[in-house]
Amino acid sequence: MKSEDFAGQKPHFVVEDYFSGQTRAWGIFEDRFGDVRAQFTVEIDGKWDGKELVLDEDFLYADGRTDRRVWTIAKIDDNTYQGRAADVIGVATGRAFGNALNWRYDIDLKVGGDKTYRVHFNDWMFLQPDGVLLNRARVTKWGIEVGEVTLVFAKNNHPIPQRPPRYSPQP
Image (cartoon, one colour):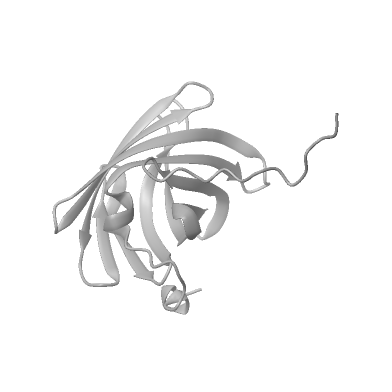
């Protein structure tokens, strides 16, 4: 897939607009066998100053662990972003077209205790109606898939709409 494949898709995903303010995400990490190895929530505080977007991410895992990542993302042109974070190796590159963003980066991923593995993320985000953002990231090491991260983002100021049930139980 290429980011450009989504150029005409709606709603239009503008990264700095979406992530400005408060955002929440819910996610899982599956290993290469499809076994869920982690479940987590993320509280994100985003600040856009017209040139850079700073995302302060607080992770809470189901087992009680916590983590924090602070991204600094620069908008290079209408479609290109570059990001840095303490555990990202070098610069993350992103391309956004239509409703999609593709991030690619290497990261030193914590895997328990003091152990880290250097892995590559191929990260896709797709903005949906009602402000829901779907995220799937394939994680590889030496070109071999080691897992997949799935996330759902929602703006705190744009709650997921509640729909009535399809049927009402009869008394």
